[in-house]
Figure 1 (cartoon, rainbow over the protein chains, first blue to last red):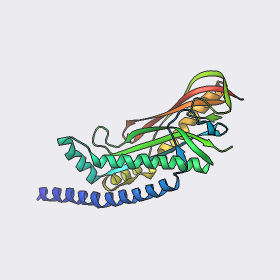
Figure 2: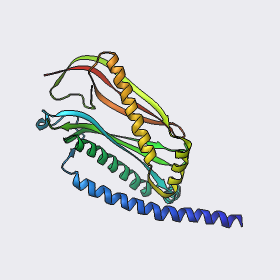
Figure 3: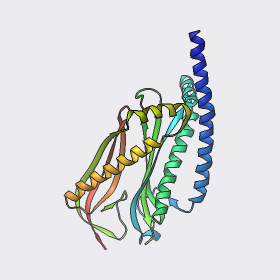
Length: 151
Length: 106
């Protein structure tokens, strides 16, 4: 009986993770694509020195951060993948989303300051989790750079 | 005070170099938020409370770095970098460091 209950709870969590997680991910990707299209004109480069045409511009540090959480389904898929090795695509999409979101937030901050470009972008990734040492809980991605503000 | 993560600021010239300055902070959210985050780990999605927490701590770290720079007479911090580490469950350390300098308009 106990086994059946445990299995039931596991399957319920798996189903919840699958449906809610997938919905959240699709919604997030839609919003990311929309905002990326809108902010395409605000150039983000990893060059350390400002390009010559921006030499009269002012500078300011801008940053964007986001903490995204895994869902139960992704955790289980990753645990299974760990047995055989290979790409853990369930985590890849999580980090991809987080990184793009962080860049977008940075761009939005730069846009509100009237910037033409963001240079010297750096990324910083860290795990924020209650269960240190165990499976991934949530990840934080920070993107920061120097906004070149129109004089 | 000018804070930047590039080494050469357009229209400005570094006239004095004052060395490394840094600021760090360790912060945690209350247990209620941690429990909510635990639930979020089933459903997925963004953890707004942690995003906010880390943003606040980063501002705090920059603030402390700025105070240190001011104390030694700098008017800018260049080449700023951030670093994050999870030192315990639900708490994280944020470090901001950079080079304190005196700049002049050219």
